[in-house]
Amino acid sequence: MSNAAQILMIAGGVLTLAIAFTYMIPSAMHVERTAIIDANPAEVIAMAASTEGFQRIKLYASTDPNQKITPFDPASGVGSGFHFDGKDGKGSQTVAAVSADQVTYAIDLGAMGKPTQTIVVAAAPDGTKVTWSMDTDMGMNPIARVFGLFMDRMMGATFARGLQNMAEAA
Image (cartoon, rainbow, N blue to C red; front, side, top):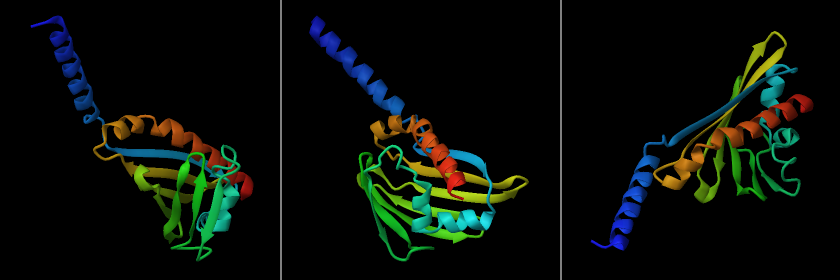
């Protein structure tokens, strides 16, 4: 066997192991951040469940001030939401469920996936404890699974900024 053939066999083996390793990474990803906001729970839910209120949170405005937002009806509650188009991608966010202590969003990022985000509120001594989380399945794509390893760092910072903006808007 020639040296070139041996090198190709070793490279193939390393590549096979690298791909096999990516399937050991969990496909389900969860990101969560929590803050205390000086507002009552009903105010936070009302803001989070309305397209206009959500825009006051300015989740991506600091990183993409040119992002285009196109709201769709209804203005608030289940079914309300908006389409977005910016430097980090395009898609839509729709309020999927609202209760006295939670708002759930269905996010559609096209080929990038369909994560679910949730804002949960609970009364706290100093205001309202707000927990913002996201759950998504990275599927069987090995590149997406590796990307998922960095999801907490990327989205966690976004949610922390969103909670801070929510506190300022409340």
